[in-house]
Image (cartoon, rainbow, N blue to C red; front, side, top):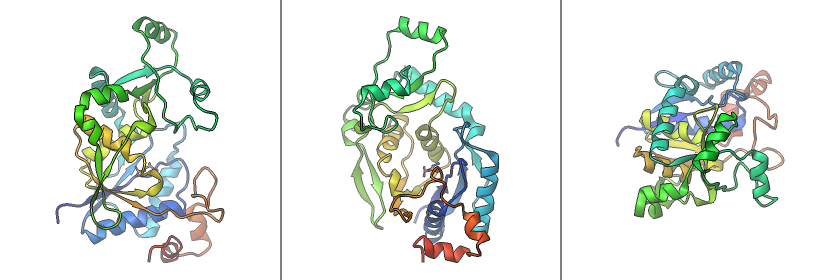
Length: 281
Ligand code: GLU
C-alpha cells in the first residue's frame, strides 16, 4: 500500500460537538488501519467567526480523545498570501471574475425557496468601465469561478470530471458535476480565500492522499474536483462517513448550540463512551 495521509480540518467557530468527534474517530481510524498519518489543519479563514479560544479547546478535546496528530498544525490564517497567489493565477487565466451583487440581490434573483449560499448562482462579469467605477467607490465584491471559462479551459475534460469514492471499501469512480453550484465564490475583497480554495490548495500542498469527511459535504466534491482539474492539483481519494443526528433527526451543528465535548467530559463520559455514542466501535 502506498503512503496514506489524511487530515482533520476543523473550523474554530465554536466548540467541537459529537459530530466532530465522530468525524475525528473516522479520520484516525482510517489512518490507523492503513498505518498512515493524520495532519491537523485549522480552517480559520473566516476571521469574523473564528476565535483563538475555540482553537485551544479543539486541541484540548482531541488530546482528551486520545487522538494525536502528526507534524506541525497548519493554520490557514497564516497563509492568506498563498491563497491570494492562487486567486491571482486564476484571475490572470480569466477563470474568476468580480461579482458585486449583494446577498440580497442574489436572493432576489433566485427562486424564493433557494438558499443564496447554496443555490447555483451565475452572474456576468461587468464591463470594465462599470467595474472600475464600482471599485473606485469601494464597493464590496466576491471573486467567482466562472463555469463557462472553466469549461473552455478544460475542454472535453470538463464533461468527464470524476473523483474516486472509497466509502464502501472499494474504489469507484463517481462523476462530478459542478453545474448545480453555479459560479462559486473563491474569495472576497477583504478575504482572499474561500473554504473551497483553501481546502483544495492545502490538501494538495500537504500531500493528502485520503479525505475522510461527513456525507453532508459529499456534494461539494464536485467543486473540489473542478478546482483540482483547473489547478492540476493531485486528487485525493474520498470517503464519506454517516453523520451523528440529534434527537430531532437533524445534523448536529455548532450554530444550533449542540453540546460541546467538554460538557460530556464534565458529565463523566469517557472517550470510549463517545465512540459508542457516535457509532464507532
Ligand atoms: N473546516 C471544514 C469543517 O469543519 C472541513 C471539512 C472538510 O474539508 O473535511 O466542516
